[in-house]
Image 1 (cartoon, helix red, strand yellow):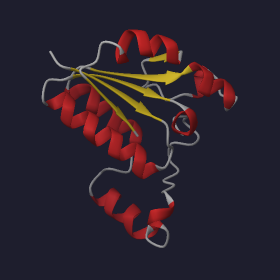
Image 2: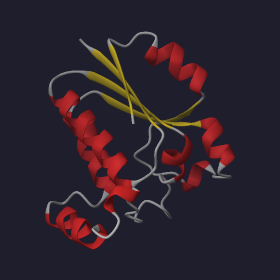
Image 3: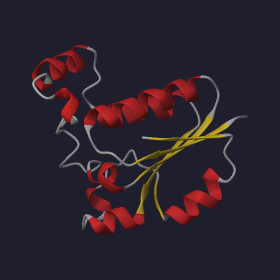
Length: 137
């Protein structure tokens, strides 16, 4: 089985959604996927922040229209998207321990769809070093 490691650092909703879409495609194709959310992306994966659909600067002036499109296409609920991805195939979602410390988050604030809190070094040894391909977002 092919293995894909994905590192997501940017926290705009469009970046998180793009990473999730490609993870879903890979998982549905039979690829084992491990995802590490870190830095700004990690700060968005809390029950308090996840509903904020904040986009990158490229979407300035289009946010309302894009939010409407995402709602029409049921792509506006990140926890639901993460659950759907896990049902699609062999996918593990991790969040960086250092990043949750940087943003002063507690484990109970994190989305329950995340599988584990992990140090970047452990993700490297367990996932990146053994992956057939690595993607970053």
